[in-house]
Image 1: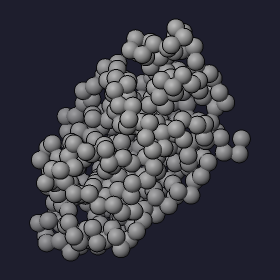
Image 2 (image 1 turned 45 degrees about the vertical axis):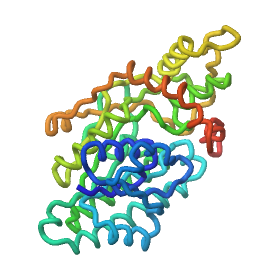
Image 3 (image 1 turned 60 degrees about the horizontal axis):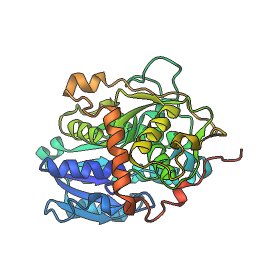
Image 4 (image 1 turned 120 degrees about the vertical axis):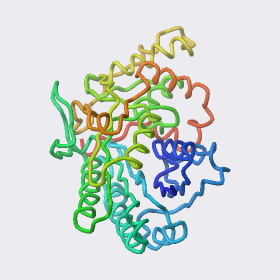
Length: 350
């Protein structure tokens, strides 16, 4: 299968690219190479004859249509997105442009291309839209998001992703485009951009900086190792039922403060502070971000029941592997916009 993967130089997208190539698929990686993308993420497959890179913006309709015509893919996996909630609070326009208008442009190009395919290829074609659990809003102390949970996005980011989900669903029901949608919990692992919680805390600790934790650190997220997510996405693309939504979670709920302390304990073991103090002495509770959802948790039972997928990496082992990777790859995270990503953003007008 030849798969057009958008955002394939990003954190999750690059894991999907590597997994797809390993599974014997051909990949066309479409990425605009914005601040959070890094071609080093796909260096391991860059010389593989099954891999092609196309630098393009998904909002550029002529460029996107030309890529469809040039490569004639059998499927699309749409991962290109603006994804950081804090950035969406400070500037929502980029999120509306990429996540809403970009998805619309891609859907239109895919639909036009799909309609030109012969019957056998049309029936086999898939458009897999990759989204987030944040579209569902916030949970209280109990319960989990299911595929039937109503959408209640609370941030500009989640609202833009909810909009793109609705567009993908509408293009299936109105025009017949064979769409699948997945909504995942928080990803983590090697190669994640420093703006996200886990690498943010690792890198600030390694630089001897304070470790800012929003509010009291009691917000809860379900954590999913990126390689497990990539495996689930390939499973859904190749074996999922058209028109369905599948939720993907890691069964690893943790409070933010507990994750930060676990990171500190690992760094105490592998990279002690020069002053002899424990790393958690640098934890600083700061003003919470506006509209911070309390808790997310995913029910993945539909995916497990229908496709037999389950997360393989437990959180303790996954976090240890992630910390080890950042310790061993300073040249990766210190390049580009790493320093800017360690500054506080997302305060909006507060």
